[in-house]
Image (cartoon, rainbow, N blue to C red; front, side):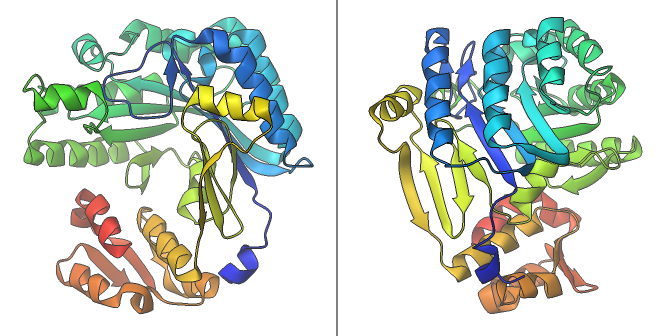
Length: 381
């Protein structure tokens, strides 16, 4: 299917952003608002108004509630949000409904709310099992609370994903391997591993530039990433995307839509949607988002009309993040062009540097290329 045809397709995925958190962690640059539980009612009203702009419900195959921390909402608020979400985005048969969660929020009451709403996948923000590292990352849970959350979730919602962060200041390879083994033994179906980054505007960025924190050196970061691949694949996980590992059949179907270049709906502060050839992002400020919805004005802060070549480049770059890589005949059918017509010189350079491999009609990152995936992708864009 060409992008011209795909542009007219109604998206089959939706994302809803829930900005609330107990506090903002020092490394976090996401759209969150901490300590403002009083805004939950106004936020839910604003979400309802934004979803009403759809005009009619749209059936989806994947629905994802992220944040922030959706489970930071009180049980009745969480129930209301899930009801709104599934009213405007009714789930197709065998759909995936994911919710991000914080370990300390997982109670029997909230698990019951999730299960009764049809949630069949939970992404748990664990980050680490070690108390020293959790304290450094400014997380508000401990190992025992992670294990307690898993014990509550797994019998009811067995498709459990865990996020882990590596390369925290002062972390050793052995300590990271310990986190990996703890995650494996937890019984999780999916793991996402992210190297710690110091983003401008975060307190970690300021502490780094005041010599209060030090980045882990590049070689150790490399060893940690490769250790994740080795430990997790030995434990039966498939490494299917640069940062993501899944037990067979447990890939994040929602995120796969992004990596496959599919269109998607989105609502909430800071949420980005891609419908047709238009990409829009809502205002990042939760209070500004609520105010705009109360006033009946658009929540959109950024509006971009994508050209076909731009969309094709994005599809190439997202496709390369998957271990399966880009199937060139399918890519050409989807976009009307080839990777070489878009950026042949760069691709040839990366092939020569052995960061990319071209075989069996597929273009994919090599093991070395995985370590430099962000650099490769930026160059190709």
